[in-house]
Length: 146
Image (cartoon, rainbow, N blue to C red; front, side, top):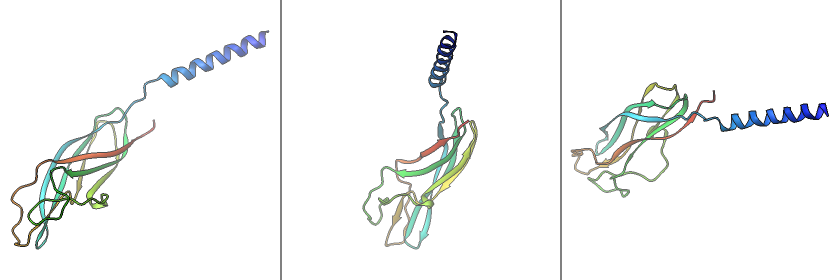
């Protein structure tokens, strides 16, 4: 009987410990874009592209790694038309995104990538303005296990 009581107490303590660790609030990572800037660059005689740069900040409670940052032009067309900003519908290339390998909690890191949107003209006259609805997006990240 003594063995059974000890075994039951041990099982109860083990179950209680498992409940407490399972119910413990896990810390989450959160990364935001703190600065963003877009610029037009002439890529060839009749071609222009939009490049992006800025900073991201880890505002979460834990360190993060493999932060993928890219950009989108939500107002650009998907059809190649002279004199109009457009995007292509292929997966982002390594030129079109930046990967921050490690970002500690509270820190900020610079990013840059190219070719958010494209523009061409047959006259050689470049675009006057950036298109509307340009944005930098945190595509993904992983939290660092403590």
